Length: 385
Ligand code: SF4
Image (cartoon, rainbow, N blue to C red; front, side, top):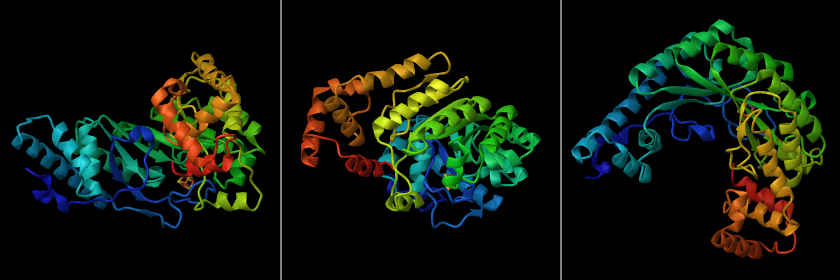
């Protein structure tokens, strides 16, 4: 039996361009379109896109569509002899999806169907009552969903009353992902983030107090060569005040669709190298005095293994940086290129002869045998975003 013969191929729904790495297997429900701010210099995701709120009924229709697709996958599983186990049929759809809506639902089902992520950039901007209605409808439609998460802006969180955030939490909003990016005001201003360190703290604290789990994102390298120290120490200071459940870092990667690209071309912003960014990360971690889980799961990070629970794992995390920095220069160069080529995942991969061979061939091809060219690294990193 082929899934393509089934009428479900006609179903589709709105899907946004991104979700956090930790939501790769979540059901994606687009509650707003694009970003209501859309001015950050380091962000290209929604540039050129007009923001709009979606009517609740339109969102509910997408949730109903997801249910029809999910039911169809279940039905096919029974017909194919897999019974209640939808994994095989869901896997078939993921490998050969008739459209993105089906792929989204199938991937979510493949992973067990336990979580949902509300897109796009700032779902908190919806009227609280409407967002509550959407979350309740989602949970009624899919009682198996245990975790509902979304992106939000600190500024918007700071404008919500604590009672509103509590209402959202009680309706089922389990986690908010907020782009803190930096805690250093001159840098926030330069990047046109539209929020101050003080607002980050107010918004972040309010989310934490409401009971919603909070994940704050910081961008390594955002201060460039000029503001890296202040960026590291002030970001740590703000994070300490907020004490979110999770701190996630990602590393600045730039493409020509970002306003920051022109700043570099004009000589107003000088990028830091991987090695300098690791120094910045060291400073950030050293200054963290909170109880968060520190996560480096973004592919742009050089050392994704820098992870742990603060404060107890701080030394372990810093030891990862030590390990890299104590390597001979040619080993560091080999690792950097191997990471940016997507061949190495961890430092220990340097001992994997097969991967090493592939990296060495690639380095030779790129003409980087003697010295790493930072431009090559930057252009490889562009492929990650
Ligand atoms: S970083 Fe977030 S707030 Fe800034 S433009 Fe991008 S999506 Fe919007």
